[in-house]
Image (cartoon, rainbow, N blue to C red; front, side, top):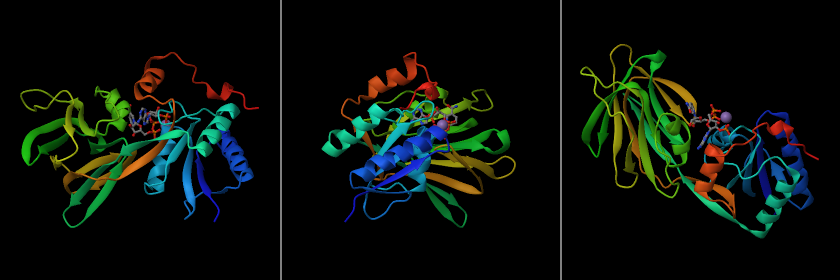
Length: 282
Ligand code: NAP
Ligand code: MN
């Protein structure tokens, strides 16, 4: 039985180059490689930015197999290495020796209920509910069956700990230690007037034993936008968006020196040259 590695890259030339190098290196040590998961796949390598990893995990239907990310994108919060030969060799050596940790990213599961049908979505970062065509969204929020607020504004971000450093952070939400299994609800441009009163900051709830749901309130047409990890879908007649507890997760390989708060410092505060194309690959 041959061991297999699945490799996915974005369209960048550097990503394709790295993919080819990884394919050659893994094949030379007895692995087969593929574009899609096979019964022998033990690892998925995503080459690109964070967006590429989110897209790949979604396209492959959130498999149990661990992922490893090589950053040829901009931020690369999920990535462990840059497209550099020494780093690639270090990764392969660590991988073969089992010298790494697995970071489990719990997924957010949401059931989108319409009149006659429903659809289940999974997110690594977040699920965003927004008004269609830039209209004000009016969203009734319920926690454990209790009415909390009718949010009015651009939309609500329902973010996992993993997503706390993404859109959630730009909208004023808090960065959450990735060991905490929580859901952060962050408003996007909330209206807070005598006419509409909404929370103006995030609220943070434990995922376990908490029922969270959103009922959109429609003023004109019955459309809303739901954006899952950056992928937008327009819906009509959604009656309820119900967050559900799930044990589903995505596994991410972290090399042994990984530390969440160090990563936050490196990616948010440290001055850094992002012009990756200037990194020469010999
Ligand atoms: P994108 O517009 O390229 O993403 C925006 C930025 O978010 C990129 O720099 C991306 O990293 C980074 N990012 C993604 N997940 C992250 C995480 N968990 N922690 C820290 N940064 C993260 O779109 P994309 O690459 O397809 O990614 C989709 C994500 O973009 C969504 O899940 C959402 O969180 C985020 N987003 C942010 C805003 C905003 O901040 N105003 C608006 C829309 C969407 P890379 O450069 O490595 O791709
Ligand atoms: Mn991106």
